[in-house]
Length: 463
Ligand SMILES: Cc1cc2nc3c(=O)[nH]c(=O)nc-3n(C[C@H](O)[C@H](O)[C@H](O)COP(=O)(O)OP(=O)(O)OC[C@H]3O[C@@H](n4cnc5c(N)ncnc54)[C@H](O)[C@@H]3O)c2cc1C
Image (cartoon, rainbow, N blue to C red):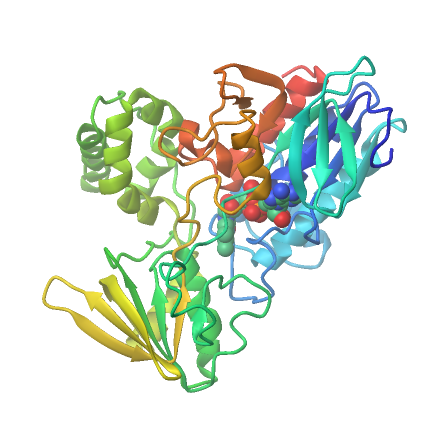
């Protein structure tokens, strides 16, 4: 099959070749009973890595034990088996390097291609999709994808797996700061941290998992003299995993009508289990699976309140650090290399080559003069963000942004809902863009389940 082919029967175009796109493609090929053409479109290489698994820093570990990171819901040992075959001894409770996990995803895709029936195929177009239009034709084409490079691709179904919006730094609207060499808007950009001098003072904006990764990289295992400050509104760091996996709590939460009730119910169960000698993490593990139900039961005003008041607390308990990462971060803090605290960025200005940050804190403002400021706030911008494709989909009414601006409006199957309020059975959404519907839709276990369900539905395979 070629770009612009007039014979798109059975073609499923997957926009985005990160973990979501690769898991969808692999599950489609494995489930296919009829000949199927799966086409992944993404300019980024290698397939599967996306931002999360592109890092070459071996200190960057996945944030779930290996038994939870398999590409297959019914084969939790798949990652472990593959890693052992590569000569890496990995136990169920180990947290593997993210670069290794990226290689695992490439392997999953290659294996799916190898096992697929001979009439099916997988192709990869290294392109960015900038437009998607509906164009029903008798040959079965339902959609045409337009590429930034000028070509196009016809498809019967389209899966939108484009990941989160690009990071947007707090200073991005400030014309005076544009181009300042000390500002790093996207820490995941190619070699973006390389320009930090060996004795630089560095302010990290954000105290979540992105900050943790960046701090470990730029502290360089003690091989330089950089001093690091991390600030966020709450100043909360992600909590750590236990070294051994915890059993999931066997209870179940009732749906709540307010954000306050919901937060209270989770806290009460966590306290009860701790009191009985258990671990709060087991409540989080169970509640995580119930999140879509609990979230969708809240009225929109309460969802908004939860995002404002409770999300950060949920995230530090839910998106935890691997124990070795926690230990490395603790060493940095105890050694005086990293200072973490609460504080809101009130103003940022250039002072020659330096930068002055004014930080609002409860006990009086703080002024930090630093050489470098790194945006570690993650995917803070809402949808459609800077994406040309998503902007076009919203403008043409093929897609709508959900009420809270977290993702795209979808129906119960994850099919895209347009401006007319109807869902399109040919347009499917996987991963981050379903946050408005599910809230928890960004990590491998959730993405894997979505990919498996979609593949079964599109191929007619039995559950
Ligand atoms: C630093 C980091 C670490 C993480 N660690 C973990 C972890 O340890 N465990 C875990 O479960 N989750 C982790 N996550 C969550 C992570 O989001 C998921 O695990 C997963 O990688 C998301 O994959 P994705 O394909 O949805 O998004 P992405 O990885 O962002 O991939 C999206 C892809 O879509 C492409 N794309 C976007 N727009 C277009 C377009 N218009 N045309 C063509 N292609 C397009 C992009 O180029 C990109 O390759 C981490 C996330 C980050 C950022």
